[in-house]
Image 1 (cartoon, rainbow, N blue to C red):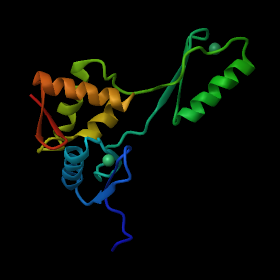
Image 2: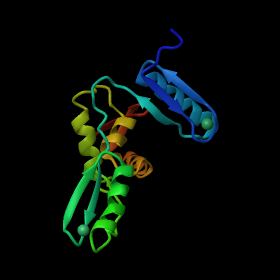
Image 3: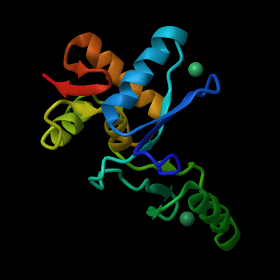
Image 4: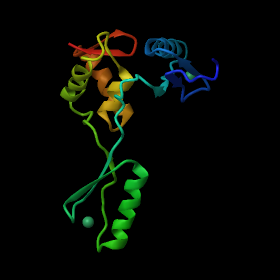
Length: 165
Ligand SMILES: [Zn+2]
Ligand SMILES: [Zn+2]
């Protein structure tokens, strides 16, 4: 069974460690131990909860001149469209494509995402899932989650599972 893919995979951007696990909590325990021993924060490169909850990233591009917004499935497509727009119109799009999703800047959004998903996860919502749902910059989303944990609005019933107060 060694060649069968496990549902969860974590890799460390700071060293060569990577680890596969059958359950989210096993992978979370590994991430917590790795952080304890190395201070490295690993990333979930595979997190298949089997619930179809991973949102497809959507990219939005807005032209101020046309007052129009287009959405794309990938950043590459959006960038290509931006280039084309300059070629086929008499103006350029100034803004870069943005990843659509809830903004991680507002506290309410993080807690709302957690509250929303907690209906499906009795023991706390896996953090990578919350980050994926927030969209935008994953590092910013994690900082926001840390801030809410310090404030006590969000707590961790077990490693890398989140619940809103
Ligand atoms: Zn590491
Ligand atoms: Zn335009």
